[in-house]
Image (cartoon, rainbow, N blue to C red):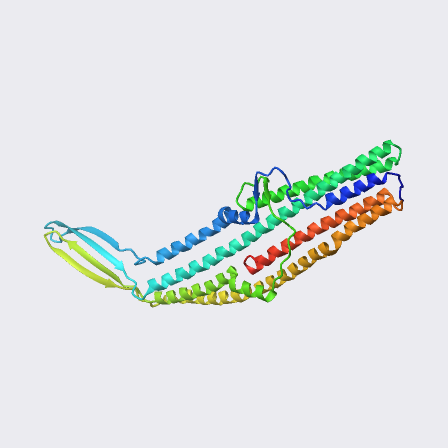
Length: 423
């Protein structure tokens, strides 16, 4: 049921122009009182330097370096210095004497274990380095996603504020027309209801935007208080990529795949070291003994364990299992990377097409429909409530467009995360 009212053409025209101009405003300024503005490059740089999770992961490099330092010791065994004394009581009860002795012993590695140990520690450091890079890949992807989410929610907040402003205008016009007796009370009530709903939507959008800012601040290592504003554009010309090229880049550079490859090398180095450890290490010993009565004895000894029972059978069996495990993990990781890249590429292409559809068809036609409605209203063919319906269509088109931009950046970030580098 429609309610026809009589208003001046000039007022309606001004109202229509204000609706179109306000709703098509692409503002990204947002909150207005941010203590700090961040570009995407700023956010990524801060995350590299300040993200506590990433900094904690990087300490694994220090642990691995410590392992390499230990492997580079000239000898893994410190010399042992010992001494003792004994009280001697002669059997013929002619007296007592005290003897003293000092010993010095050193275990030696003679089968090249040191070089193999260094090689294993270096392979381990290379593996840990790739694992840290992979953690950085995932962390920076989180920062990008949080950054674009904040931009997206900022745009939504601006749209909700614009809608609230428009509904406030409608409320004022409806109230004045009701006072003038031009429209029924229901028109004024509907306008008031729409304004209340718009206010509620704005409050919720402001809350979501603040939460997004806090998430971004946490990821870049700042105090999450919600006062940092992202600086950037959601609407950018979409780029075109070649799927095969992206897949090749991922298989060549993804740090998680490189880490698995380094693990295979590390296991091979540890296996070679373990085989060298089967060779027994000799222990050289020198001693000095001072006996009461002036006798002094200097001598030496050589000893080494006999590898009769323990020939590192258990360790070599475990390492064989780890070698096979690392091989299968490499195959699994490669397959997973291929799936991630292909899925992310498909999502990116769909999101890019979605943005193109809105920019080429929906937005312009929505504005055109509003102009047609304005003409129809001016000619008396529709009423004010039909203009409100068109306003809703235009608002929904704007929100859908912003959603499509968010989907684009979400897909773009997922594609870069899958490839393992910026595109």
